[in-house]
Length: 402
Image (cartoon, rainbow, N blue to C red):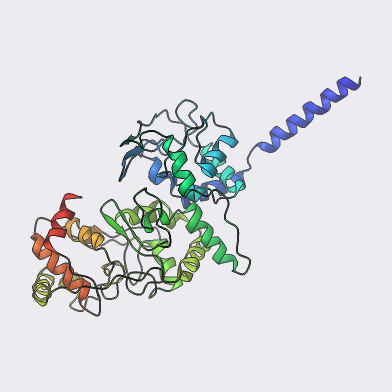
């Protein structure tokens, strides 16, 4: 009798545990919000008809990587993974088979997430439609084509562990830090990298090159950073893709459409509070102003091609055509993003909070390399702006990296 009672007790305990293990609707919804905040779909969706099925090519300085399938397909996705498998991937960058991921998957940031948040993300991903889609193998140069090398990389550059709150800071600041440094992995683009692809120490959020664009500084630098932006300016930009000072384009436009515009007002405000608190990091490089001849030639190009939308004083039409005076992206040490917009044109980001459109034509075929260099120099140095001279050779190089 005792054996039977013990068996019944154990069976009941296991059943209760299995029932308790089922994620609640609240957990799944929280997981969805976390997935959106992390912009997981941005990297893990190659075919819009198969969201999160992976296979998207991600180019790095060391070669190409293809994102894996995050849907619950048991053969090619994560359907057969345990919670511990998923936790190990995000916390330690280790796949279920023990191999190491490459840091194009930002586990150095995701390691800072709490276990409940990691499992909430897992719970939401488990509700997705499963798609069979096996990603191609990485196309990396030797020796990085051998994953065992990542053990050395992790030893040198990876420090696992959750982000501990700073008790002397407010709730918004700590939440914003958690989102910026952890889930949002903002430093992946906005922090320069060393020759091994790791963040350069002491240069957090001081800007970085990403696929022909320059992700600008997020610290309090005077010209190229956020010193002149208020918390409300930052929050509006993240929520709508524009504000009275600048507009999003390139990779950041995708982040806003797929991620930040879907976040709660509270989380957006928290991010803004944290970013606004960042002091100016490394000093901005000294400006080497363009020659007066280039400024005069650029002013003539501006009067012919730009003045109709951006006005003679560069004021534009805020939230439709971005203003140019004081624009931090325009004054970045690296002019890559400015050249990209002039060469390729731009389309104003449209989000539920800012549905009206605006566009700028591409000038790659209308202006010569020297003309683009001249007008870039003009807008980077007129109206109180300050930016180092851009050459025709830089423009020619930018054309090749499109």
